Image 1 (cartoon, helix red, strand yellow):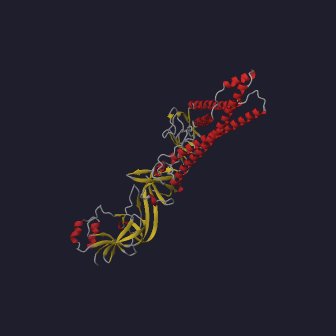
Image 2 (spheres, helix red, strand yellow):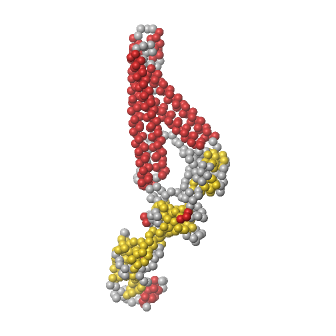
Length: 534
Protein backbone atom coordinates (compact mmCIF):
# COMPACT_ATOMS: atom_id res chain seq x y z
CA UNK A 1 0.00 0.00 0.00
CA UNK A 2 2.83 2.39 0.84
CA UNK A 3 4.45 1.79 -2.52
CA UNK A 4 1.24 2.68 -4.32
CA UNK A 5 0.98 5.89 -2.40
CA UNK A 6 4.61 6.73 -3.16
CA UNK A 7 3.98 6.39 -6.88
CA UNK A 8 0.94 8.58 -6.50
CA UNK A 9 3.03 11.26 -4.81
CA UNK A 10 5.73 11.21 -7.50
CA UNK A 11 3.14 11.40 -10.21
CA UNK A 12 1.55 14.45 -8.66
CA UNK A 13 -1.04 12.69 -6.47
CA UNK A 14 -0.43 15.12 -3.60
CA UNK A 15 1.77 15.22 -0.52
CA UNK A 16 -1.23 15.37 1.81
CA UNK A 17 -2.56 11.97 0.75
CA UNK A 18 0.88 10.39 1.30
CA UNK A 19 1.40 12.05 4.67
CA UNK A 20 -1.91 10.70 5.91
CA UNK A 21 -1.03 7.07 5.20
CA UNK A 22 2.75 6.70 5.50
CA UNK A 23 4.35 5.10 8.50
CA UNK A 24 6.81 6.87 10.76
CA UNK A 25 9.70 4.74 9.43
CA UNK A 26 11.81 6.37 6.71
CA UNK A 27 11.18 5.01 3.24
CA UNK A 28 13.08 5.55 0.01
CA UNK A 29 12.53 5.29 -3.66
CA UNK A 30 15.39 3.24 -5.06
CA UNK A 31 16.69 1.63 -8.21
CA UNK A 32 19.36 -0.96 -8.87
CA UNK A 33 22.60 -0.08 -10.66
CA UNK A 34 23.00 -2.31 -13.67
CA UNK A 35 24.08 -2.60 -17.31
CA UNK A 36 22.63 -0.47 -20.09
CA UNK A 37 23.63 1.25 -23.31
CA UNK A 38 24.28 4.96 -22.78
CA UNK A 39 24.36 7.63 -25.46
CA UNK A 40 25.18 11.29 -24.87
CA UNK A 41 23.76 13.71 -27.42
CA UNK A 42 24.10 17.48 -27.69
CA UNK A 43 21.06 19.15 -29.27
CA UNK A 44 20.72 22.61 -30.74
CA UNK A 45 19.99 24.67 -33.85
CA UNK A 46 22.25 25.48 -36.78
CA UNK A 47 22.32 27.26 -40.14
CA UNK A 48 22.67 25.58 -43.53
CA UNK A 49 25.39 27.00 -45.76
CA UNK A 50 26.84 25.83 -49.09
CA UNK A 51 30.39 24.60 -48.88
CA UNK A 52 31.38 26.64 -51.93
CA UNK A 53 30.11 30.21 -52.07
CA UNK A 54 31.68 33.54 -52.97
CA UNK A 55 30.50 37.05 -52.19
CA UNK A 56 32.27 39.59 -54.40
CA UNK A 57 32.31 43.37 -54.28
CA UNK A 58 34.46 46.07 -55.84
CA UNK A 59 37.66 46.66 -53.83
CA UNK A 60 37.67 50.30 -54.97
CA UNK A 61 35.04 53.01 -54.84
CA UNK A 62 33.33 54.27 -57.95
CA UNK A 63 30.18 54.50 -60.00
CA UNK A 64 28.89 51.26 -61.50
CA UNK A 65 28.95 51.54 -65.28
CA UNK A 66 27.35 48.18 -66.09
CA UNK A 67 26.17 44.87 -64.61
CA UNK A 68 26.32 41.92 -66.99
CA UNK A 69 24.66 39.14 -64.95
CA UNK A 70 21.36 38.53 -63.21
CA UNK A 71 20.13 36.10 -60.57
CA UNK A 72 20.11 32.52 -61.82
CA UNK A 73 22.82 33.01 -64.47
CA UNK A 74 25.53 30.37 -64.72
CA UNK A 75 29.03 31.86 -64.58
CA UNK A 76 32.56 30.56 -64.87
CA UNK A 77 35.68 31.51 -62.97
CA UNK A 78 37.13 34.75 -64.35
CA UNK A 79 33.92 35.83 -66.07
CA UNK A 80 33.15 39.56 -65.86
CA UNK A 81 30.17 40.38 -63.66
CA UNK A 82 30.16 44.19 -63.47
CA UNK A 83 32.25 47.23 -64.44
CA UNK A 84 33.01 50.57 -62.78
CA UNK A 85 33.44 53.88 -64.61
CA UNK A 86 37.22 54.18 -65.04
CA UNK A 87 37.62 57.91 -65.75
CA UNK A 88 38.77 58.78 -62.22
CA UNK A 89 40.90 55.66 -61.88
CA UNK A 90 42.69 56.34 -65.17
CA UNK A 91 43.39 59.89 -64.01
CA UNK A 92 44.95 58.54 -60.82
CA UNK A 93 47.26 56.33 -62.87
CA UNK A 94 48.37 59.29 -65.00
CA UNK A 95 49.00 61.39 -61.89
CA UNK A 96 51.09 58.63 -60.31
CA UNK A 97 53.15 58.30 -63.50
CA UNK A 98 53.91 62.03 -63.39
CA UNK A 99 54.88 61.86 -59.71
CA UNK A 100 57.24 58.97 -60.42
CA UNK A 101 58.90 60.80 -63.30
CA UNK A 102 59.51 63.87 -61.11
CA UNK A 103 60.96 61.74 -58.30
CA UNK A 104 63.29 59.95 -60.70
CA UNK A 105 64.43 63.28 -62.17
CA UNK A 106 65.16 64.67 -58.69
CA UNK A 107 67.23 61.60 -57.80
CA UNK A 108 69.22 61.81 -61.03
CA UNK A 109 69.83 65.53 -60.55
CA UNK A 110 71.09 65.14 -56.99
CA UNK A 111 73.39 62.26 -57.93
CA UNK A 112 74.76 64.32 -60.82
CA UNK A 113 75.38 67.27 -58.49
CA UNK A 114 77.48 65.07 -56.22
CA UNK A 115 79.51 63.81 -59.17
CA UNK A 116 79.99 67.31 -60.56
CA UNK A 117 81.27 68.52 -57.19
CA UNK A 118 83.86 65.74 -57.17
CA UNK A 119 84.97 66.53 -60.73
CA UNK A 120 85.57 70.14 -59.77
CA UNK A 121 88.10 69.05 -57.15
CA UNK A 122 90.88 68.80 -59.76
CA UNK A 123 91.85 71.73 -62.02
CA UNK A 124 90.78 70.97 -65.58
CA UNK A 125 94.07 72.30 -66.90
CA UNK A 126 96.07 69.85 -64.87
CA UNK A 127 97.86 67.28 -66.92
CA UNK A 128 99.38 65.42 -63.99
CA UNK A 129 98.57 61.75 -63.73
CA UNK A 130 98.19 62.04 -59.94
CA UNK A 131 95.27 64.47 -60.16
CA UNK A 132 93.55 62.38 -62.80
CA UNK A 133 93.95 59.24 -60.73
CA UNK A 134 92.63 61.02 -57.64
CA UNK A 135 89.58 62.26 -59.55
CA UNK A 136 88.88 58.79 -60.90
CA UNK A 137 89.09 57.29 -57.43
CA UNK A 138 86.78 59.94 -55.96
CA UNK A 139 84.20 59.38 -58.69
CA UNK A 140 84.31 55.62 -58.14
CA UNK A 141 83.85 56.03 -54.39
CA UNK A 142 80.92 58.40 -54.80
CA UNK A 143 79.25 56.23 -57.44
CA UNK A 144 79.64 53.12 -55.28
CA UNK A 145 78.32 55.03 -52.28
CA UNK A 146 75.31 56.28 -54.21
CA UNK A 147 74.47 52.76 -55.39
CA UNK A 148 74.87 51.39 -51.86
CA UNK A 149 72.56 54.05 -50.39
CA UNK A 150 69.94 53.53 -53.08
CA UNK A 151 70.04 49.75 -52.69
CA UNK A 152 69.83 49.94 -48.90
CA UNK A 153 66.93 52.40 -49.06
CA UNK A 154 65.08 50.13 -51.50
CA UNK A 155 65.46 47.22 -49.06
CA UNK A 156 64.11 49.32 -46.20
CA UNK A 157 61.13 50.46 -48.27
CA UNK A 158 60.37 46.86 -49.26
CA UNK A 159 60.70 45.78 -45.62
CA UNK A 160 58.23 48.44 -44.52
CA UNK A 161 55.67 47.26 -47.05
CA UNK A 162 56.05 43.62 -46.01
CA UNK A 163 55.91 44.48 -42.31
CA UNK A 164 52.85 46.64 -42.84
CA UNK A 165 51.11 43.87 -44.78
CA UNK A 166 51.97 41.30 -42.09
CA UNK A 167 50.63 43.57 -39.36
CA UNK A 168 47.44 44.23 -41.30
CA UNK A 169 46.87 40.51 -41.80
CA UNK A 170 47.46 39.75 -38.13
CA UNK A 171 45.10 42.51 -37.01
CA UNK A 172 42.39 41.41 -39.45
CA UNK A 173 42.73 37.67 -38.82
CA UNK A 174 43.39 37.53 -35.11
CA UNK A 175 41.86 40.51 -33.27
CA UNK A 176 40.57 38.25 -30.49
CA UNK A 177 43.89 36.46 -30.08
CA UNK A 178 45.75 39.77 -29.98
CA UNK A 179 43.50 40.82 -27.10
CA UNK A 180 43.78 37.47 -25.33
CA UNK A 181 47.57 37.50 -25.62
CA UNK A 182 47.55 40.89 -24.00
CA UNK A 183 49.12 42.62 -26.98
CA UNK A 184 46.20 45.08 -27.23
CA UNK A 185 48.21 47.39 -29.46
CA UNK A 186 50.42 45.35 -31.80
CA UNK A 187 53.94 46.64 -32.53
CA UNK A 188 53.90 49.80 -34.63
CA UNK A 189 55.63 49.61 -37.99
CA UNK A 190 57.97 52.56 -38.48
CA UNK A 191 57.80 54.50 -41.68
CA UNK A 192 54.85 55.22 -43.92
CA UNK A 193 54.62 52.76 -46.80
CA UNK A 194 52.20 53.78 -49.56
CA UNK A 195 48.70 52.44 -49.28
CA UNK A 196 47.66 49.83 -51.80
CA UNK A 197 44.20 48.47 -52.47
CA UNK A 198 43.95 44.77 -53.16
CA UNK A 199 42.72 44.42 -56.73
CA UNK A 200 41.12 41.05 -56.12
CA UNK A 201 37.37 41.23 -55.41
CA UNK A 202 36.42 40.50 -51.84
CA UNK A 203 35.69 36.79 -51.65
CA UNK A 204 34.29 34.95 -48.66
CA UNK A 205 33.58 31.26 -48.53
CA UNK A 206 30.38 30.23 -46.86
CA UNK A 207 30.04 29.41 -44.14
CA UNK A 208 32.76 31.60 -42.69
CA UNK A 209 35.71 29.51 -41.63
CA UNK A 210 35.96 28.92 -37.91
CA UNK A 211 38.27 31.37 -36.17
CA UNK A 212 41.90 30.42 -36.60
CA UNK A 213 43.49 28.82 -33.58
CA UNK A 214 45.92 30.49 -31.23
CA UNK A 215 48.93 28.78 -32.85
CA UNK A 216 48.10 30.20 -36.27
CA UNK A 217 47.67 33.68 -34.85
CA UNK A 218 50.88 33.42 -32.88
CA UNK A 219 52.66 32.52 -36.14
CA UNK A 220 51.21 35.62 -37.80
CA UNK A 221 52.37 37.83 -34.95
CA UNK A 222 55.81 36.21 -35.18
CA UNK A 223 55.90 37.15 -38.87
CA UNK A 224 55.25 40.76 -37.87
CA UNK A 225 58.11 40.67 -35.38
CA UNK A 226 60.43 39.01 -37.91
CA UNK A 227 59.56 41.67 -40.49
CA UNK A 228 60.28 44.42 -37.98
CA UNK A 229 63.61 42.83 -37.07
CA UNK A 230 64.60 42.68 -40.75
CA UNK A 231 63.56 46.32 -41.18
CA UNK A 232 65.74 47.34 -38.25
CA UNK A 233 68.73 45.42 -39.64
CA UNK A 234 68.33 46.95 -43.10
CA UNK A 235 67.93 50.44 -41.59
CA UNK A 236 71.26 49.89 -39.86
CA UNK A 237 72.81 48.88 -43.20
CA UNK A 238 71.33 52.05 -44.73
CA UNK A 239 72.97 54.17 -42.05
CA UNK A 240 76.29 52.49 -42.79
CA UNK A 241 75.91 53.14 -46.52
CA UNK A 242 75.01 56.79 -45.90
CA UNK A 243 78.08 57.16 -43.69
CA UNK A 244 80.32 55.73 -46.44
CA UNK A 245 78.87 58.06 -49.05
CA UNK A 246 79.21 61.01 -46.68
CA UNK A 247 82.88 60.12 -46.22
CA UNK A 248 83.42 60.07 -49.99
CA UNK A 249 81.63 63.40 -50.38
CA UNK A 250 83.72 64.83 -47.55
CA UNK A 251 86.90 63.75 -49.28
CA UNK A 252 85.67 65.44 -52.44
CA UNK A 253 84.92 68.65 -50.52
CA UNK A 254 88.41 68.60 -49.00
CA UNK A 255 89.92 68.09 -52.42
CA UNK A 256 87.92 71.05 -53.73
CA UNK A 257 89.24 73.24 -50.93
CA UNK A 258 92.79 72.08 -51.52
CA UNK A 259 92.53 72.63 -55.26
CA UNK A 260 91.08 76.07 -54.56
CA UNK A 261 94.06 76.95 -52.39
CA UNK A 262 96.43 75.75 -55.09
CA UNK A 263 94.59 77.81 -57.67
CA UNK A 264 95.00 80.91 -55.53
CA UNK A 265 98.80 80.47 -55.74
CA UNK A 266 98.77 79.94 -59.52
CA UNK A 267 100.07 82.93 -61.58
CA UNK A 268 97.22 84.94 -63.00
CA UNK A 269 96.12 83.84 -66.44
CA UNK A 270 93.06 83.11 -68.43
CA UNK A 271 92.93 79.47 -67.39
CA UNK A 272 93.49 80.08 -63.68
CA UNK A 273 91.02 82.96 -63.61
CA UNK A 274 88.30 80.91 -65.19
CA UNK A 275 88.91 78.04 -62.83
CA UNK A 276 88.85 80.31 -59.82
CA UNK A 277 85.61 81.89 -60.96
CA UNK A 278 84.04 78.50 -61.49
CA UNK A 279 84.89 77.32 -58.00
CA UNK A 280 83.81 80.56 -56.45
CA UNK A 281 80.30 80.00 -57.83
CA UNK A 282 79.99 76.33 -56.75
CA UNK A 283 77.44 75.25 -54.13
CA UNK A 284 77.37 72.49 -51.52
CA UNK A 285 76.40 69.16 -53.15
CA UNK A 286 73.39 67.15 -51.86
CA UNK A 287 74.11 64.97 -48.83
CA UNK A 288 73.96 61.19 -48.56
CA UNK A 289 70.72 61.56 -46.60
CA UNK A 290 69.23 63.46 -49.52
CA UNK A 291 70.06 60.62 -51.92
CA UNK A 292 68.34 58.19 -49.54
CA UNK A 293 65.31 60.48 -49.33
CA UNK A 294 65.20 60.77 -53.13
CA UNK A 295 65.28 56.98 -53.48
CA UNK A 296 62.51 56.65 -50.88
CA UNK A 297 60.40 59.08 -52.93
CA UNK A 298 61.01 57.02 -56.06
CA UNK A 299 60.06 53.82 -54.25
CA UNK A 300 56.89 55.39 -52.84
CA UNK A 301 55.92 56.74 -56.26
CA UNK A 302 56.54 53.33 -57.84
CA UNK A 303 54.37 51.63 -55.23
CA UNK A 304 51.59 54.18 -55.63
CA UNK A 305 51.65 53.77 -59.40
CA UNK A 306 51.38 49.99 -59.00
CA UNK A 307 48.48 50.43 -56.57
CA UNK A 308 46.65 52.78 -58.93
CA UNK A 309 47.18 50.41 -61.84
CA UNK A 310 45.79 47.59 -59.72
CA UNK A 311 42.79 49.73 -58.82
CA UNK A 312 42.16 50.35 -62.49
CA UNK A 313 42.31 46.62 -63.18
CA UNK A 314 39.96 46.01 -60.23
CA UNK A 315 37.30 48.17 -61.86
CA UNK A 316 36.21 44.98 -63.59
CA UNK A 317 34.47 42.64 -61.12
CA UNK A 318 34.94 38.96 -62.00
CA UNK A 319 33.67 35.69 -60.57
CA UNK A 320 36.29 33.75 -58.57
CA UNK A 321 34.46 30.42 -58.97
CA UNK A 322 32.21 28.48 -61.31
CA UNK A 323 28.63 28.52 -60.14
CA UNK A 324 25.21 30.12 -60.16
CA UNK A 325 24.49 33.78 -59.45
CA UNK A 326 22.34 33.70 -56.32
CA UNK A 327 22.10 37.42 -55.56
CA UNK A 328 22.81 40.69 -57.38
CA UNK A 329 22.90 43.90 -55.34
CA UNK A 330 24.47 46.14 -57.99
CA UNK A 331 22.89 48.36 -60.65
CA UNK A 332 24.23 50.69 -63.35
CA UNK A 333 24.61 54.25 -62.06
CA UNK A 334 24.92 53.12 -58.44
CA UNK A 335 27.80 54.49 -56.36
CA UNK A 336 29.64 51.58 -54.77
CA UNK A 337 32.02 51.97 -51.85
CA UNK A 338 35.16 49.87 -51.58
CA UNK A 339 34.59 46.37 -50.19
CA UNK A 340 30.92 47.14 -49.63
CA UNK A 341 28.90 44.64 -47.61
CA UNK A 342 25.73 45.64 -49.48
CA UNK A 343 26.82 46.40 -53.05
CA UNK A 344 27.75 42.83 -53.91
CA UNK A 345 27.12 39.76 -56.03
CA UNK A 346 26.80 36.27 -54.51
CA UNK A 347 27.78 33.15 -56.45
CA UNK A 348 27.00 29.67 -55.16
CA UNK A 349 29.34 27.00 -56.46
CA UNK A 350 28.65 23.34 -57.07
CA UNK A 351 29.04 20.96 -54.16
CA UNK A 352 27.39 20.09 -50.91
CA UNK A 353 26.15 21.90 -47.86
CA UNK A 354 27.29 22.10 -44.29
CA UNK A 355 25.76 23.34 -41.07
CA UNK A 356 27.26 25.78 -38.59
CA UNK A 357 26.14 25.96 -34.99
CA UNK A 358 27.45 27.22 -31.66
CA UNK A 359 28.24 25.39 -28.42
CA UNK A 360 28.65 27.09 -25.05
CA UNK A 361 31.90 27.12 -23.14
CA UNK A 362 30.72 24.48 -20.65
CA UNK A 363 30.22 21.89 -23.38
CA UNK A 364 32.62 22.75 -26.21
CA UNK A 365 35.31 20.58 -24.64
CA UNK A 366 33.14 17.52 -25.30
CA UNK A 367 32.78 18.23 -29.02
CA UNK A 368 35.48 16.74 -31.26
CA UNK A 369 35.98 16.54 -35.03
CA UNK A 370 34.75 13.23 -36.37
CA UNK A 371 31.77 12.88 -34.02
CA UNK A 372 28.59 11.80 -35.81
CA UNK A 373 25.70 14.22 -36.06
CA UNK A 374 22.10 14.21 -37.21
CA UNK A 375 20.62 17.22 -39.00
CA UNK A 376 16.88 17.79 -39.40
CA UNK A 377 16.06 20.81 -41.61
CA UNK A 378 13.11 22.94 -40.57
CA UNK A 379 9.95 21.80 -42.27
CA UNK A 380 11.38 18.37 -42.99
CA UNK A 381 10.81 15.23 -41.00
CA UNK A 382 13.67 13.45 -42.71
CA UNK A 383 16.95 13.64 -40.75
CA UNK A 384 20.28 13.80 -42.55
CA UNK A 385 23.55 12.40 -41.27
CA UNK A 386 26.90 14.11 -41.04
CA UNK A 387 29.91 14.60 -38.83
CA UNK A 388 31.73 17.37 -36.99
CA UNK A 389 34.61 18.69 -39.11
CA UNK A 390 35.75 21.78 -37.19
CA UNK A 391 35.50 23.24 -33.70
CA UNK A 392 36.47 26.90 -33.29
CA UNK A 393 39.09 27.59 -30.64
CA UNK A 394 37.96 31.17 -30.03
CA UNK A 395 34.64 32.45 -28.77
CA UNK A 396 32.56 34.00 -31.53
CA UNK A 397 29.69 35.39 -29.48
CA UNK A 398 28.65 35.85 -25.90
CA UNK A 399 25.14 35.59 -24.58
CA UNK A 400 24.26 36.22 -20.97
CA UNK A 401 27.91 36.09 -20.02
CA UNK A 402 28.43 32.65 -21.57
CA UNK A 403 30.81 32.37 -24.51
CA UNK A 404 29.84 30.38 -27.60
CA UNK A 405 32.18 28.53 -29.93
CA UNK A 406 31.49 27.78 -33.61
CA UNK A 407 31.12 24.17 -34.73
CA UNK A 408 30.98 23.11 -38.39
CA UNK A 409 29.22 19.90 -39.47
CA UNK A 410 29.59 18.40 -42.92
CA UNK A 411 26.64 16.55 -44.42
CA UNK A 412 26.91 13.11 -45.97
CA UNK A 413 26.20 13.22 -49.72
CA UNK A 414 26.31 17.01 -49.52
CA UNK A 415 22.79 17.43 -48.15
CA UNK A 416 21.08 17.98 -51.52
CA UNK A 417 17.92 20.05 -51.71
CA UNK A 418 18.73 22.32 -48.77
CA UNK A 419 18.48 26.10 -48.98
CA UNK A 420 21.36 28.33 -47.96
CA UNK A 421 20.58 30.24 -44.79
CA UNK A 422 17.81 27.92 -43.61
CA UNK A 423 17.80 26.59 -40.05
CA UNK A 424 18.05 22.99 -38.94
CA UNK A 425 17.96 21.01 -35.72
CA UNK A 426 21.37 19.62 -34.80
CA UNK A 427 22.11 16.55 -32.67
CA UNK A 428 25.78 15.74 -32.06
CA UNK A 429 26.58 12.34 -30.55
CA UNK A 430 29.23 13.02 -27.92
CA UNK A 431 29.73 9.43 -26.86
CA UNK A 432 28.20 5.95 -26.66
CA UNK A 433 28.98 3.10 -24.27
CA UNK A 434 27.64 -0.35 -23.43
CA UNK A 435 28.10 0.20 -19.72
CA UNK A 436 28.23 -2.48 -17.01
CA UNK A 437 27.08 -0.07 -14.33
CA UNK A 438 24.57 2.70 -14.95
CA UNK A 439 22.22 4.76 -12.83
CA UNK A 440 19.52 7.27 -13.68
CA UNK A 441 21.08 10.62 -14.48
CA UNK A 442 18.79 12.26 -11.93
CA UNK A 443 20.44 10.17 -9.18
CA UNK A 444 23.86 11.72 -9.81
CA UNK A 445 24.77 14.93 -8.02
CA UNK A 446 27.85 17.09 -8.33
CA UNK A 447 29.60 19.38 -5.91
CA UNK A 448 32.38 21.24 -7.68
CA UNK A 449 34.31 18.62 -9.64
CA UNK A 450 33.06 15.74 -7.48
CA UNK A 451 30.16 13.47 -8.44
CA UNK A 452 28.33 11.24 -6.00
CA UNK A 453 25.21 9.13 -5.57
CA UNK A 454 23.28 8.06 -2.49
CA UNK A 455 23.29 4.29 -2.08
CA UNK A 456 21.21 2.21 0.33
CA UNK A 457 23.59 0.24 2.55
CA UNK A 458 22.03 -2.04 5.18
CA UNK A 459 18.82 -0.13 4.85
CA UNK A 460 20.47 3.23 5.45
CA UNK A 461 21.43 5.90 2.91
CA UNK A 462 25.16 6.45 2.36
CA UNK A 463 26.80 8.97 0.03
CA UNK A 464 29.28 7.42 -2.39
CA UNK A 465 31.76 9.28 -4.57
CA UNK A 466 31.61 7.97 -8.12
CA UNK A 467 33.51 8.36 -11.37
CA UNK A 468 31.36 8.98 -14.42
CA UNK A 469 31.72 7.88 -18.03
CA UNK A 470 29.18 8.78 -20.71
CA UNK A 471 26.43 11.04 -19.37
CA UNK A 472 23.10 10.60 -21.13
CA UNK A 473 19.84 12.47 -20.71
CA UNK A 474 18.23 9.68 -18.67
CA UNK A 475 21.04 7.22 -17.90
CA UNK A 476 24.66 7.81 -16.85
CA UNK A 477 27.59 5.41 -16.95
CA UNK A 478 29.42 4.88 -13.64
CA UNK A 479 33.01 3.70 -14.08
CA UNK A 480 34.04 3.69 -10.44
CA UNK A 481 32.67 3.86 -6.90
CA UNK A 482 29.58 1.73 -7.49
CA UNK A 483 28.97 -1.92 -8.36
CA UNK A 484 26.26 -3.57 -10.38
CA UNK A 485 23.43 -4.59 -8.09
CA UNK A 486 23.93 -1.73 -5.61
CA UNK A 487 20.73 0.02 -4.63
CA UNK A 488 20.72 3.71 -5.39
CA UNK A 489 18.39 6.10 -3.61
CA UNK A 490 16.36 8.31 -5.88
CA UNK A 491 14.35 10.04 -3.14
CA UNK A 492 13.84 10.07 0.63
CA UNK A 493 10.08 10.05 0.90
CA UNK A 494 10.15 11.29 4.49
CA UNK A 495 11.87 14.56 3.53
CA UNK A 496 10.38 17.68 2.00
CA UNK A 497 11.26 18.62 -1.55
CA UNK A 498 14.79 20.12 -1.75
CA UNK A 499 15.09 23.88 -1.93
CA UNK A 500 16.83 25.67 -4.77
CA UNK A 501 19.58 26.85 -2.41
CA UNK A 502 21.27 23.50 -2.02
CA UNK A 503 24.98 23.49 -2.88
CA UNK A 504 24.90 20.29 -4.92
CA UNK A 505 23.21 20.01 -8.27
CA UNK A 506 22.04 17.27 -10.54
CA UNK A 507 23.32 16.53 -14.03
CA UNK A 508 20.87 18.59 -16.04
CA UNK A 509 23.20 19.12 -19.00
CA UNK A 510 21.45 22.30 -20.13
CA UNK A 511 22.99 25.56 -21.31
CA UNK A 512 23.18 28.12 -24.10
CA UNK A 513 20.47 26.59 -26.23
CA UNK A 514 22.31 23.30 -26.42
CA UNK A 515 21.30 20.47 -24.16
CA UNK A 516 22.42 16.85 -24.05
CA UNK A 517 19.89 14.25 -24.96
CA UNK A 518 20.22 10.51 -24.96
CA UNK A 519 18.69 7.14 -24.74
CA UNK A 520 19.22 4.03 -22.73
CA UNK A 521 17.21 1.91 -20.39
CA UNK A 522 17.58 2.47 -16.69
CA UNK A 523 19.95 0.06 -15.06
CA UNK A 524 18.25 -2.75 -13.18
CA UNK A 525 14.52 -2.90 -12.72
CA UNK A 526 11.87 -0.31 -12.14
CA UNK A 527 12.07 2.07 -9.24
CA UNK A 528 10.66 0.67 -6.02
CA UNK A 529 9.61 2.03 -2.67
CA UNK A 530 10.78 0.44 0.56
CA UNK A 531 10.99 0.94 4.31
CA UNK A 532 14.16 1.71 6.07
CA UNK A 533 15.53 -0.56 8.73
CA UNK A 534 14.73 -3.76 6.97
